[in-house]
Length: 462
Image (cartoon, rainbow, N blue to C red; front, top):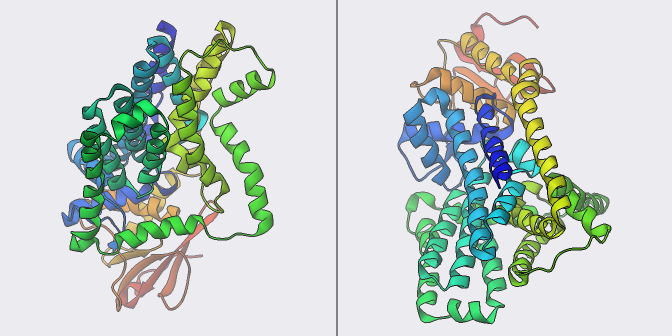
């Protein structure tokens, strides 16, 4: 157990250096929208460049709170802190769940280490300043507390599950309830758990699940349209794609999942293919329940025409639980082999975040966003500056501009008939303005357009 605890500690510590990496991908969405929320003091609307993007705002509330403590210059750090805390919290939920169900602290620690050591979670998904870790923390927490509540006939944990799934909805999307409903259906298959969940007291608690979405979507005038926007996201996942592309997706998606769930997924597959002898399962009901919850939640994302692996993040802990349980039952040799893989992967993580990621960001993509942002501010000084580019490259640049200009107003989309100033655009459409400068950032281009007196600024040479 000591070695497992030590590896868990090092895995958690490996997230710290990621806090100070430059902006990556779409991290700018929550840095920008949180700064705009603090500027507007509108706590119910998430805006990007002043445009309502129809998203719930719980993550923004957390980012605003932390940013006010550590300073808005560190808004990216604050956003990543939320993501990392959520990832570690999700691992904590798994430890708690396994300890309550399997009554084996050593296995609970091993399962938690298996989860935090999932390749995708440890190296990438667990620290990026996206909403997925927080969304998954609440969803898996809701499932874990629902499961324990039904197993122990505990109304307090049942009420906690309602609070957690409500927070999941306020974090990202209505799909949180699909995960929760799947877990509920599986638990109802057990006669003992069904007796509790269908009791009058439990039904009264469960009925309160409608309160938060009902109030949020129907009783707050400012949020008109958010419900249809959340449903539209689901429809987008079902959009038709070319048959060949879909066939390729059906083949590649499981392989990608197997890789992202490594090393436990690969070790588990090896043990099963070799028909390695496993010890008898002394908690077969719980193992089966984990499988029955995970599979119906994973398969639709595999079969849907659209959707990435990150949408499975709420199921990462259950995947880790199932794999960890098989490895645990395979005996001491299998456990020792797995622990060596965990140690190696954690060592690789430190090399990546301390050496390779910083090198890449300083020489390929990362610091160039900061340089471009400051160059744009210098060239546009004295004139209004607007933005109408929702690509991640623009969001990274705007994040830095907003940080450098704070407490001045954040960049916004241009008004309909603006006649003077500069515009950051994804293209050089003359209808938007005259081309002032094309900025090359690796494989991406962003265009600085102008109108009116701003165009008489000294133009850069091409």
